[in-house]
Amino acid sequence: MVIDDEEDVLRALKRRFEREGWEVDLAESAAQAVEKISESELPYDVVVTDMSMEDPQAGVRVLQAAFARDLFAQVIVMTAYGQVANAVDCMKRGAFDYIEKNRPGTDVYEVLVGKIREALDERRRDIRLVSKWERTAEFQRARKQRRGSPS
Image (cartoon, rainbow, N blue to C red; front, side, top):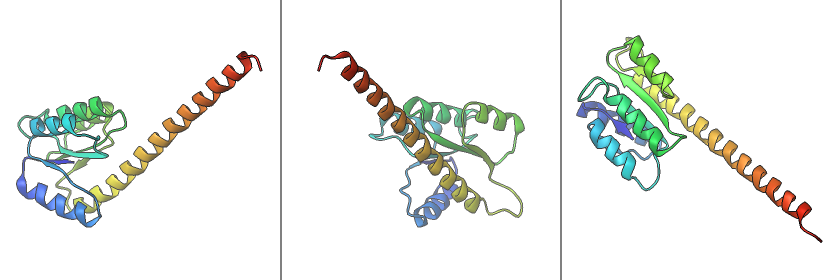
């Protein structure tokens, strides 16, 4: 999912990400994104959101909604205004990364593609790890039941 209040940015990101073979859902505001996140049948693998849309904390609300929906959410926060305090706050709240949109001499689209790949890898690793924990716990439960039951 990509959230930004600038239509040109939304369309450009959608085109670039679709070239990577990714499905892209769009939202033009934090409110619309929060609604889509909470109502989606499956959680989004990665959420890319602008920090300041209808207000300076809009991106934080998206971040919170993503984690409320899915503990393995990977959220990348973008901003046109690189504010250290915002970046630190988002990272403390669990954002995967925080990226400035207007970096001179940098193709932000390429940076985002790389960050999304990293976020997808991390999500897959996290989900695999939990799956291993669940299998181990199930194995331990079954083993205890076999020991405790007369044969």
